Image (cartoon, rainbow, N blue to C red; front, side, top):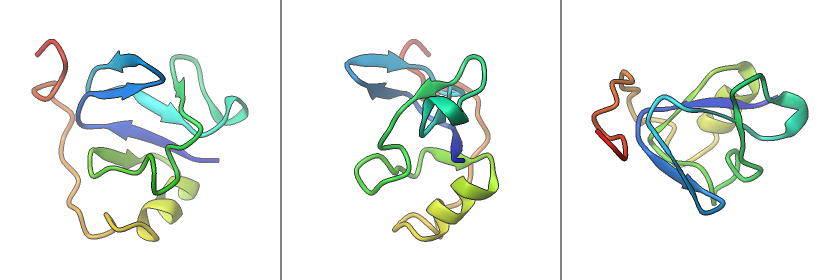
Amino acid sequence: MARFGSTQAFQVNNKKYKAGQTYADTTGNALAGDVVWATVGTSAGMSPGLVPLDAGATTIMNASRFASTPSYRIDGVNSIDG
């Protein structure tokens, strides 16, 4: 299971999402309202704008190049309509 929150806007599969959106790596891991982003836990999808929300996501983040990136609060300032 890997779920991430976001501190910035992202474009996933040609659709734009605001800061504060939650992303899951599979449909089975997604909760209501989550966007399924299959590559969120890979080097192709990993970003400093993602915050791990569970143990699986924490493990993935700690193994990524963004392991030492500080987390920021989600305020919508980097959002697509903010």
